[in-house]
Length: 146
Image (tube, rainbow, N blue to C red; front, top):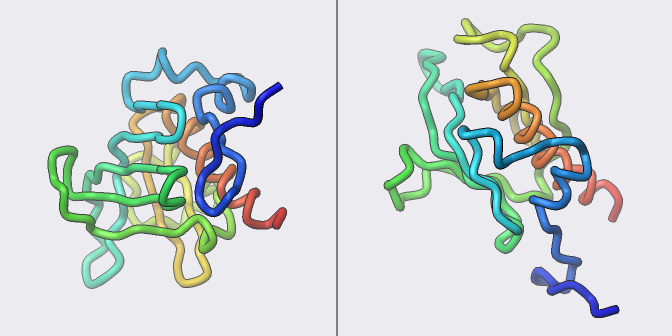
């Protein structure tokens, strides 16, 4: 049996499609999320951090190769707005305490906690939220295991 290709620096390559299917998701039936072997992409609403807590639609890319969760102003924009290294992700959870300021959809709001801040995100559907939470939690779990 051959070893799967590796991600730098020599960590096992995670096939996101297989991983999500193993956990009961069917990404092919979720039009809001694009999943390939090493990437998960799609639009999420993100609560702004400074000044007014405004919700903005952002294009998110979870990528196993550079090991980061990045977001852009839109799908065509090549200028990175911000990125979160996998190592910085501490936790991913449903916003059960409803801390997100004026969330456009409380049932689809989840949080990505890093060592520096909490990102409040809203998915476009329950299926998309489940996929995003599992994908991001995988990176956090991997970091806590090492």
